[in-house]
Image (cartoon, rainbow, N blue to C red):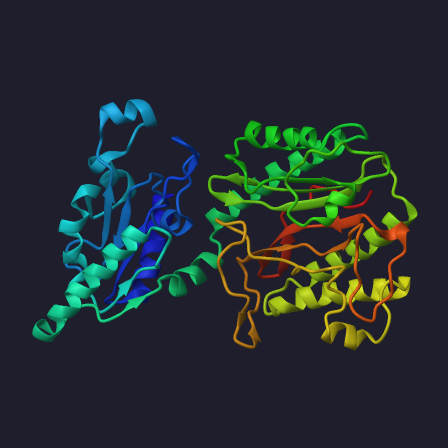
Length: 430
């Protein structure tokens, strides 16, 4: 993989020219008191380096005469490593991660200026670490003061994500291979959950089966808090309590994916735990399934991203009009978004190192077009809460439809010939 990281750095350096890019590792997050969460590296930092330790800084200086890729890392410390795990250290980091120079993080203030003082811009994203933000701003201000005398130095700070994130949006073959594995593991977990779930068991028991499969198959764990939502809980988009006992005739909505070597999957299935839909559940499920299949068909190179959502909404509105759950002119319903009490979210999002991955969806008023190598989710739904309130001018919803929540989601790779559903191993016909 080191050649992969090297190619990514070269691609970014080609875009920043005489600038210097600075990336800070993710913070160590505290669960409670002095107990820390498992460390998860910042996605941009990991994408460029593969380095998976906190308290580190990566610098890309393509204009520097000697060092173009520089790392600042924690040095080896046997006493601390006894408590918190082994560190790569300065010497091994240079060999393992291909840096031209590696320094202890304690030398950052001393060494960093030499990689910035001749740059025309600093590429740095103001992040959550206020102390580090102030460090970079102070360095820039000092260099601005010398600019009138020297005539060189950074005169601007620019967010590197404007050039980095378009690179991340297009997945390499190595990335696609990891995403296939994440999809395969998550698909197995969903199939296990479908076989296990039954009336009388608790949502958390289904969650345990899913996450057991993730870890058993080598994933780091869930890509996000697993949603196991039975009955009316399925109408809560990000329900994660997972405490309800599943009842006969419930639908069970499971939205769960895994993280595998930093790459994520994201799958949703909704199914009847008793093995058979009620009449109302079946009707709404067929509308959502049709919306999803037609939306997936829009995932084609050159198609605008927005077409996927427009297609799903069109199918859902047609279905709700046929049922009398919506009334009026379809174009007016679209324009005034009167469908939103039933379907309030978008139909998909980019997927990759982040679950809601980087990348734009539009350029001003112009939608972004699909390109081979991009991965998106496709996830339409219909949600009719027990206390459902229709849009103004729309009819009240009969009690028999209330408490039904349905979402179907797959991970879809854009290919040169069209698309590939990476999560097709989980059934959608029940």
